[in-house]
Length: 102
Image (cartoon, rainbow, N blue to C red):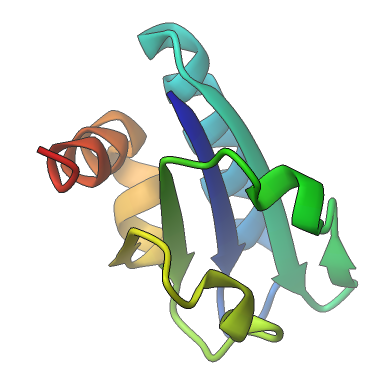
């Protein structure tokens, strides 16, 4: 299972990175491969490139604000949720995203 995610909160400081860490940790525990891009006060970090999106099964957008380059995910299976959900229960966010595929 290939997953990519974008995390972004309005301030783009702490919660953006907490959500990233949570998703990475949960995905690893669940046996999924994930790459997480952050968009915040530091701009875009760990940017998802076209090659990262090539074989992706699902995109998780854990966002509370508008993100840059959202059109990259057109025509892809996208699961959108809040940053808080990704911080509080990353495993459930991933589980919900994967269940959308079924």
